[in-house]
Amino acid sequence: MIAHRRDPLAFRRASSLVLALIVLWPLLKLSQFHPAVLFEAGNLKVAGSFLRHFLPPETSAEFLGLVAKATLETLAIATAGIALAFVLAAPLATAMTRNLSVSRIGPGRGYRMRAVARAVIRSIVLLLRGIPELVWALVFVRVLGIGAAAGVLALAITYGGMLAKVYAEVLESSNAQAAHALLGGGSSRIAALAYGLLPNAARELVSYTVYRWECAIRASVVMGFVGAGGLGQLMDQAMKMLDGGETATILVVFLLLVLLADMLSAGLRKLLD
Image 1 (cartoon, rainbow, N blue to C red):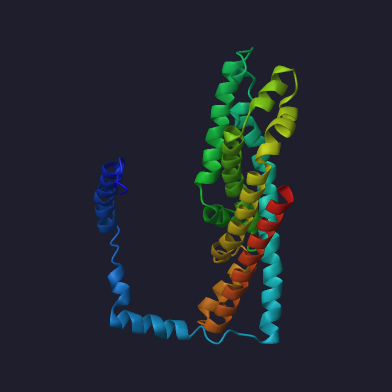
Image 2 (cartoon, rainbow, N blue to C red; image 1 turned 90 degrees about the horizontal axis):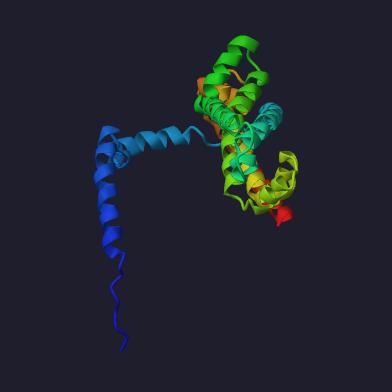
C-alpha cells in the first residue's frame, strides 16, 4: 500500500494564493473591474448590434487596393523603425553589459568612470523606453507633418530603448566564461561580444527582435490615429465614417501580418538551431 505523502510546500503555496487575492481584490475594486456587466442582457444586445456592422467585410477592388498600399506602408514603417531601433540599441546594450566590462575580470584604470558611464546610459535607455511611441508620434507629426516618417522615428526611439534593455539583460544572463577569457587575453570588447556572448544568445536576441517587429506592426494601428500613416490611418478614416465592413477587412489584414511575423520568427529560430 502506497502511503500518501503531504506536499511540504502546500502551506506556502496556499498562503501565497491567499496573499495574492488579498492584494488583488482592492486593486480590482479600485479599477472598477466588473466583468459581470458584460453579460447583462442589455449590454449583450448592444455588443451584438455593434459587431453586426462589421459583417460582411469590404472586398471592393478599389478599397482592397488602398489596403494593399497601406499594408506595404505599415510593413515599411515597422521594418524601418525596428532597423533604426536596432542601430540605436546595439551600441547602448553593448555599453551597458557588465559581462563586457574589464572590471568584472579585475579592477583596472578608470573602472569607476566606466561604472558611472553605464549608469548614465541606463538612464538614457530608461528615458527612451519610458515615453510611449504614441507620444513621440504626436511630437514628430507636429514637426514633420502627417505621414510615415513620424511613425518610423517614434518606433525607433521607444523600441530602441526596449531593445537595448532586453539585449543587455540577455547578454548578461548568458554564459560569460568565453567572453571573460577573451577580455583577459587582451581581446577587444567587440571580439568578446562576437565570439564569447553572441553564439549563446543569438537565438534569443533574434526571437525578441522579431517579436518587437510584430509589436511595431500592432503599434502602427494606434499611431495611425494621430496621422503616422499605414493601416492605422486607414482604419481611423473607416471608423470615423462608421464603416464596419472596411474596418473588418483591415483587422483581417492585421491578423495576417501577425501570422506572418510568427512564421518568420519560427523560421529564424530553426535556422539558428
